[in-house]
Length: 61
Image 1: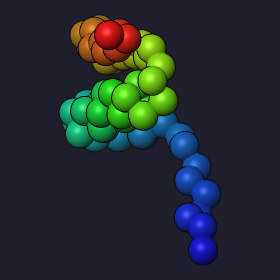
Image 2: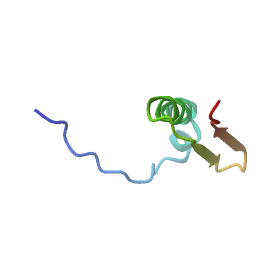
Image 3: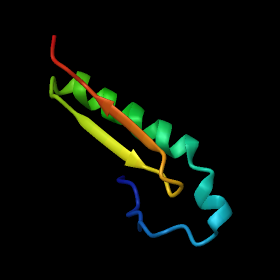
């Protein structure tokens, strides 16, 4: 059995939209896993609604 399809849409509640540290950390973790598993160079840039910058970049060694 497969998973159900997930519909992505904007979070309407502005308070809930601000509390996204778990989602952001999960996305950064997935980028790191992808770079390790696929031996690929991955770059990720995230701008929060407040203008804060979060980034991740992998390099091959």
